[in-house]
Length: 535
Image 1 (cartoon, rainbow, N blue to C red):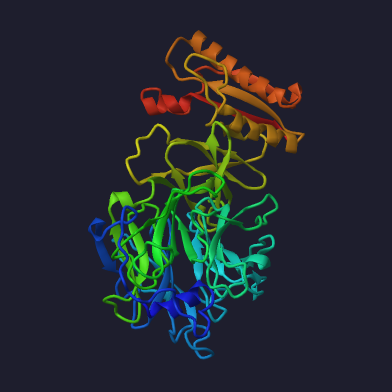
Image 2: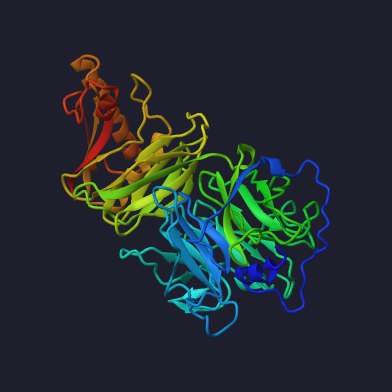
């Protein structure tokens, strides 16, 4: 893989300077101890085939969370935008995996992508509706070094790239190569950059999304990850949001840059476990970088020069359990207008319960409202869509009660109710203990959204109602539901909403929305909802 050095350096951002050599090309194997995963742990290495690979160099794979979308670089292809202008042109190519697991024939992506000499996709969001690309663009025009975001449009094409505004970015990106990735939450950006002019050794930095849409000033991941006088680059954060893979020429590797794995230990992104070398055959005595996974964490995608169709090919490597990141749940679905049942393009927010902390964000596709999000186990989540002039019917997922049985896919559609007189909104994240009407603390996250609606729309008046299933007597069910509705009303009033704007009513079992003959039906009937009376 030694010949990959100049090629991969280009797709990292800029090729190595003339005369520059990798740090150790002796090929001498360095004895490993406890921090290595051996070749015996690898199950299978598989070339992605001629639909993806050619007699040219295929580089820097980026795969979607659901494993169905693949972006990569093809170098020197005659279809590349700047093929006639420069040697070693690099453009973004794309393929999709069908239901049988086969990749489609890769196709070249035209404008507004692939407008420069060297182009690359750094990251695709779990929802499949955003990509992070190389270069800073303003209104589609190249504006220098940096990173930009493209969004999927209603026609399925990508929008013009728009640069991410990163505070003091120019102070940090002064080396010959740089690049980026995003954590699956869409709110944490990782950069590999060198603040010293001309320094070939990168460090990995983190930036956080701010309320105004900009990104915080880059901050080093700390001394465990960034060793002095060594190169750390091409980070990739797995779907669990904790496991990071990166390339480094640090001591203890097999030769030159190797792929290493580390686990984030807290929310600061400054504390990490001691990195572990992934060993052979992923790592070689030469230069290794660009390691990516799907959300299942089962397959790693990388570039190799071993047994290839051309200069370099993209392969997938199936790993055993102990090499994988922590398992996650992939939630897929569509966002709909609850009144018309038509799909909607909306923003997605997921929060942990009971604290209401924002865990991540996404967007649904403009064409069909489709989305994917990835959620780690061990927490409970509230998931909702947001759009102007709509109120979200939140859904909840209790993942702390599930055994970590591995990667799991759940389908859950989200609905937005138009803010109109007569519309009824079900509050799925309001909770009571059995036979009680005192609100449980995790209910406050949901009810605070109702408070926000009422404060932002001072003319709205609502009826808050509670309902039961048919278990128990009519009198018992009426009393329980009425007390629960009253508890919700009292909480909303306590948050500064005028008493005259909200009435409460318990309906017992008199307004079922499903059969009471099944557990699932009874669960649907036990609910709290509000109706817009005046707007």
